[in-house]
Image 1 (tube, one colour):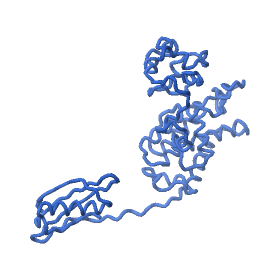
Image 2 (image 1 turned 60 degrees about the horizontal axis):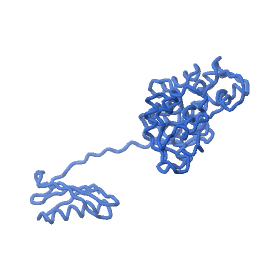
Image 3 (image 1 turned 180 degrees about the vertical axis):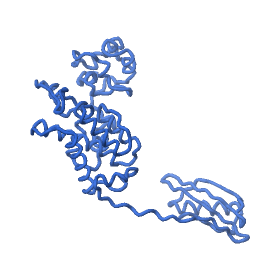
Image 4 (image 1 turned 60 degrees about the vertical axis):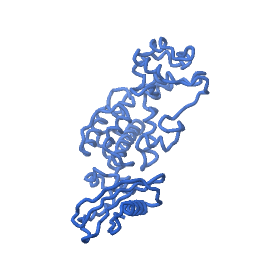
Length: 345
């Protein structure tokens, strides 16, 4: 970075890089004239030049940015910040959008939007192409935010689908916000709530292109129809299973999903039976790990009264061995020999 091979600092002015945890610096930079400025231009005597930074962005952001460590003398390199080794991987890139189970063309649109590179009018204009811009559904200029999140038809689609899943829609400004809002309560990879935002984005983009290039009418009903058809196709293709609908099983019928519902688990009553008179009963449980294991037990008499309880670490080769080994060794060491041992294995 110090050699100036990367123009990373003023990628920030374009809103593409995040230099601290709060946000990108796009809101702090109010000029386009410094797009060619490089990191080395705000670096003096081996440290950030706080004065130069303050002239470019707010003082608060300048202070935060100045605390970012840069290793001087090392060659410039691009790092992928969501992997532990800094190396880019397609698997990790897809996972950022919650993309695990559906068609590549849908995932590619979602990924391109995530990068802010889908060729709406404003993005094309930034590449130096001169053209007039107008949304297909109103007189607003065609920006990414307007096409996918804020125009009247788009907003109505997000609101309706959110209501179908039982939560209130809050206006989104980008794909990250949409995915986060839909997946806050989801911990299953490939869950339907990870898929739906991507399907909506695909449906909006497809309807926009058909209207712009084929002359068809861009309508709310056309977008919603595409959302339903695409989701139904994914379900009927067996790309998602019952576990991917966890918490939203009642929605299955809306999308004509063909999923195998697992049978309900059989319930059984488990009771503790007293040992014979004069016999002690040892209930023991263990946990087996690669480096060490642990076990614990409770010893009771024929009346169910507690005699002793213990816990310890062991080094066996299986969970059952962890339990039996610990239990018997402990009992022998404490002179309890007339035993009935009970485990869950």
